[in-house]
Image 1: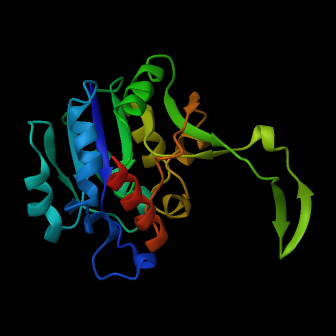
Image 2 (image 1 turned 90 degrees about the vertical axis):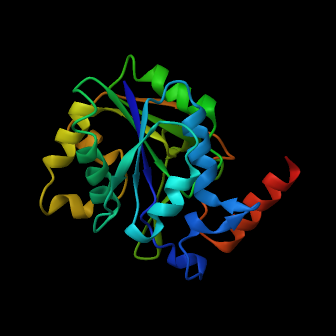
Length: 226
């Protein structure tokens, strides 16, 4: 069984809007509706948990058209605690070897193919990360000064969604409580820290995260062409 956790608890301060970016109108519908549609349509997803604040839950319920919605989880003090909240909501649904795919509501252009590719890769690995190669020369910078030239071929940019075997991943997160989890900067970091077997699959340039008004404009341009 495979469940999805959609992270929709962020406030989106960099958008300069009173409404979090995932609830902004885009093409006549909320941004979050696009990724929910992809996960609902995916044949590999059995259930969906949404991490969201109470005031947006009626809206989110109205966006589901099938029976995959499995409930809400409360946002945490940071992104990783929000993920753990979603994982805890799945304790009665998933078993140790089942899979969970975690996605940001502000990444509206996730494809059904990427979801399926992650699910397929999880058959052989404990975790899966979509990655994009870096196009520019990469340097290490400390205190405003370049200190090293890094090997671009061994560095990649990670994307969501990310896939995990449920049991090992929730244990990895619980091992960081109560303090270390506050320092986590990426969903895959707990898996790296405990030595989970992590596979990479190709990322998707269109699967970008809406963070700034320019990102929203880019998204609107894409959906207007389609």
